[in-house]
Image (tube, rainbow, N blue to C red; front, top):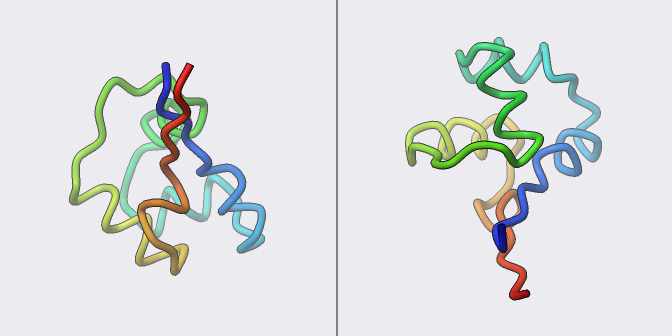
Amino acid sequence: MPIIVNLDVMMAKRKMSLNELSEKVDLTLSNLSILKTGKAKAVRFSTLEAICKVLECQPGDILEFVEK
């Protein structure tokens, strides 16, 4: 898939665990893990907004398009 999810990179930069992020954005660990590993087929804008607020970043910091 040409969309790369860099959620783990942003979490590392903010020194935040998956458990902590899960609590702050009110998502289950499994759903957040699916997103983090790049296995998600879609992401809601409200979810992306919540993640960006907590990690203090832009959507482009989390999602990246890489042409094959």
